[in-house]
Image (cartoon, rainbow, N blue to C red):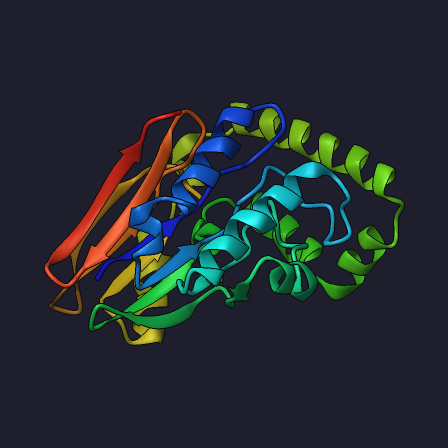
Length: 242
């Protein structure tokens, strides 16, 4: 059987074709015959809380719940765009929440699962902001705001992020190899799967004189991207828009 992984869909009303592709893929024979289905963060462009009454969260929940009801376990790990997603929505969507840095045995291989942003240690400005917004106090403050105020806040955060991305050296925003190796060493694994960087690839390298592998999931801005892990190997492939 096959285990499937996706990340960095950044679903948003501005790109309805990607939401349709997501719904169609989760309803496909490939997805519904999988052993398990993992979403490793940034499912949406911005998550403003489990109480969001917009149409998009309802469509997402229907798609993931349909896959779960078909007998496929659906696992979700928050990313930097949807870290406010909580147990209430996960239950509604038929998803099991995973902590960043969870190890699951995938087709016989212990595999470290991460969103990937904590590995970008060269981007010290981002890491400082990340530490601030992940505190319970900050999250409670945001979630106590009215929905419209949260929507406005999220729109400004997206604009600021886009502006910053345009002026920062891309290499700084990539993972740090030392951080990768430290995370894998601490987890006791030789395989890591993560997203966040939007640089899909399979990297083979030596970790303490042992063959190791880092698999980076692709984003869904212009097309879909899926990682398939089977007993006889791994493969990254794209999905065409409907």
